[in-house]
Image 1: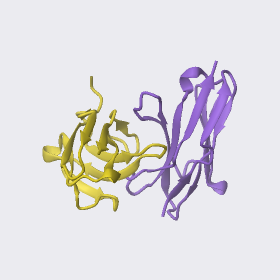
Image 2: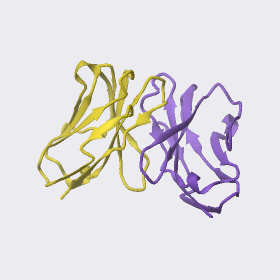
Image 3: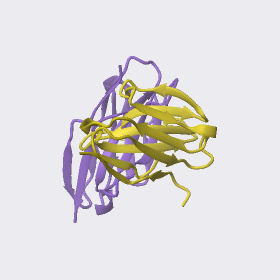
Length: 115
Length: 112
């Protein structure tokens, strides 16, 4: 069975602060994919990143960075210098690599960035 | 607009009625997914099509639910004999790459 835990239900930060969203996962699969999705107030989920379990290299994309640590089964997401437009619900998700279609989503972390 | 489109955006129905949702994926995407999302929860996988073949169905998908994707283009999700517990946002997504899903805006179902 696969499970994704996002322990932080809500986070509130002031603009320009850095914020880290935690994601811990459980799986018996030896190969799998991890994902982050963003759901802004408008409601449409937006893909942010996919990470293969073989690739533990951290990734940076602009103000976004992801830290994948297999040893602790974590795939954390950091937003540097947060902006009001980053306000959204962020979901971490997991799927076995032999399918990739049945994504198991966490319950999400609601991020509020205030001016 | 070349994104995933869903129709209707909002459906209010009485318990026991049948409802059908339609999804038009991004035209070149061969994979199509249905998910369900309730308030405060992450999306839950319902079913998956590759072209016209339905390759996976979640245990969440009771026999009152049926999905089709004729000719590998648009898809429909029908719920028969709706129950109040079916009230949710029904999300359609399509993709070319594994996991890189493009979601529609969803169809919100309210069962009275």
